[in-house]
Amino acid sequence: MNSRPDNSWIGAVFIGLLVWGSGCITPRAPGADTRQGPPESAWKSSSPGEDTVMIVGINDFHGSLLSKERKLPNGQGVWSGGASALAGMIKILKEESEGRLLIVDAGDEWQGTIESNQVKGASVVEFFNRIGVSAAAVGNHEFDFGVPNMSARFLQAKYPYVSGNIFEKKSGERVKWKNMIPSKVFEVGGYKIGIAGFSTVQTPSTTRYEYVKHLDFKDPASVLGPEVEALRSKGAQAVLVTAHAGTICEEKHGLREWRLLDRSSPQGACDPEHEIPLFLKGMPQGSVDGVIAGHTHQVIHHFLNGVPVVQGEAYNQYFNILYLVFDRATRRLIPEKTRIEGLIPICEQVFEGADHCDVRRLDGKKSPEMVQAMFHGKPVSPDLSVERWLLPIREGTEKFRREVLATSELPLTHFRDREGSFGNLLADVLRQKGNADFSLVNSGGIRTSLDSGEITYDGLFRALPFDNLLNVVELKGSDVKLLYRIATSGAHGVIGVSGLELTLIPFDQEAPKEDLNGNGRLESWETRRLIRIRKADGEEIEDQRTYRIATFDFLVNGGDDLGWFFSKVPSRAIRRDKTGYCRDLVTEYLKREKKINTREHPLLDPDHPRIKFAPRSE
Ligand SMILES: [Zn+2]
Image (cartoon, rainbow, N blue to C red; front, side, top):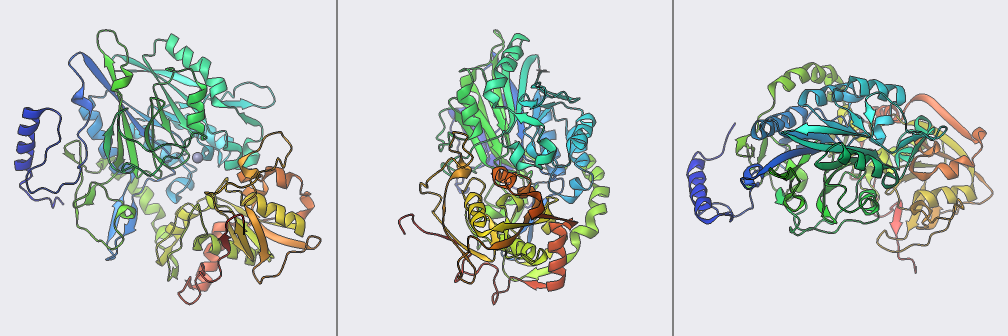
């Protein structure tokens, strides 16, 4: 397995001598490649009178128990992530820290794979129990299988779920679910760490609305203050927040590289208007010592106003560590010594000359050799007890996963910010199945692109994990225009359409907003980016004519901020198809077509784009 040259001990001794002699520089053996290797652990870096506590931050696991395969240009498969690799890495950390660590999850645990969805998340909770997760936030997708199922998962967990901003609309009281609490104090290595949590205020528009319509997801800064104070009064020497909410940070300063960062490290800016920056702004200075964030699937290892915030993308491909340093005599946290280690790739093998196994980060033409992955000076190996536990789950889903449905000559692409062939495929299937004039699918309904070649059921499931049903809505032309105007605001990525040609104001340009729902606020979904909407054949849409639109029940039920629009549509105008999930409709279509997205008939036709961008002046 280990194909590294066997003279690595020479380098190790050499580096050891240099470190001994010179302190803090990171020297390299002569002749070695000059890349910045993975950082050493920050565990032993504190002064003699100090103690360190390690916080392992994971987020947006989305059922990713099995490792993910991506192909190199030479066709070789590369595996990344997976439960047993993560467990193997956590084992290394537990040994290193002698158990002085907490594993904190930021939510969206169980929506997204066959291994998880077929047991409604139970397998993921069992895995989290096995690795010893300490606390987890409640993600929007935790609600996807309904509150009774979620409550069953809460009871199954050996760790508490923490969320302090979920209230009952009727009583105005905080929800009372067993093993779901606003906050808790944990004892680690003689220190008390308080953890409070919250859920994104976007939850009602990002899960099945009917499951959460009785709940109020309050602005976290307005309700978490007393919780954080209570944690301090219970003796917490540090207070962390695990939040299923995030922000978006600039792709700068080697954002995806594996580094050890402190407050002075150069970092790209993060969007101040997202939930975490707004939350920190709304909390008293110094009240929060660190945030494990989620939901936005981004890379965050930033000090926002001095507060360390971490997020490790999504799907169990990466994680982060926070090192909290305490003064042993005073028992106080030394915030300026807090460090972040991230982005840590979850790999058993890495590309030679790199410290990750992420095909997306390679130069598209390269097919490098794989070598043993190292983590904190130890080789990464899968946790065998997890591997054994996973085996029947893996075998049980094997026949589904392997089934080849069709081949796609070109990749099935999905982007948040522009038209992709996957969205077009899905939109075409819905329109055809619903016998509709047009269709509309949301960007968030597709979770990943798929490579060209064979499309397996597993690949399709990973891309379309949601149990969306087909709805067909009859609308007048004027309402069709309003619907697509809201759906193209940019608040939730670029939609997929069929039967239409849309022209939008680019996302990096200002666009006008109107207070459509008259609530006195200009919200992002009220942005008007749609400049032109026409039928695919170039004909205009007539305001008074009735058209049929095929879409997901998720959107008709108010998802992605379409609640205001669909609340005005009479229920008789909506036909709800309950014959099968949209994923099954696509499966059926692929099996019938066998060959799709060919060079001759590409789903994304550069000569006839379905979604165009044009400056506002045009
Ligand atoms: Zn989420």
